[in-house]
Image: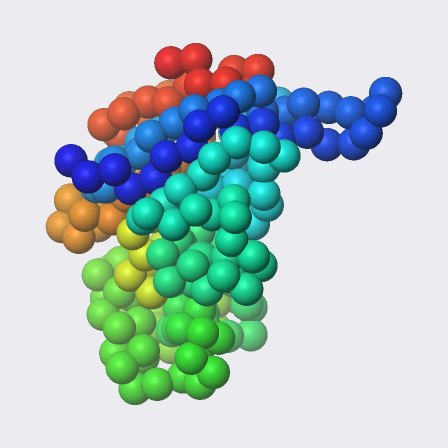
Length: 225
């Protein structure tokens, strides 16, 4: 398989002097294109910090991070924003939908921001994704009127809108009942299988992790398994 991203000797510290806290302690990791991997570890292990760095929302204190052949440590903020918009999608525990927007408007939003307007092609892509998520009858519903499971499926569709190579999911099923959680994970697995999108899913749920083909365990700022 082709290497999608690689981080090596990643260090991240917060604070200075006596207040300095080292969260990542020389972490190294390789993700191959098309993987569906679970990111496991106790609270405080560094998982969220790692996801934030992989999403180019924060830079490490030191170390190397390259994705698709691009050095993302050396890149400036403008370059990181463009790279992120083109290549990385996000799904969070809290769906972060805009409540006054319809399901379709929420899904199309990332493309509208990137292109400066909402296009017919983007709306067609959004409708296709929502239909695939089983939400064909909810496309024009305000997101505030959707159930928790439906909102999270909209969030997955939004993450896929720009056809990213990588989707980072931080506890994507943490607020869902078991049936809704399994439905979301089934959709993620389908997208991974059919489109080759790489997923890295942070979770505390062993059953969710068991649905992934690889488990990456983080402890005390390092990959331990």
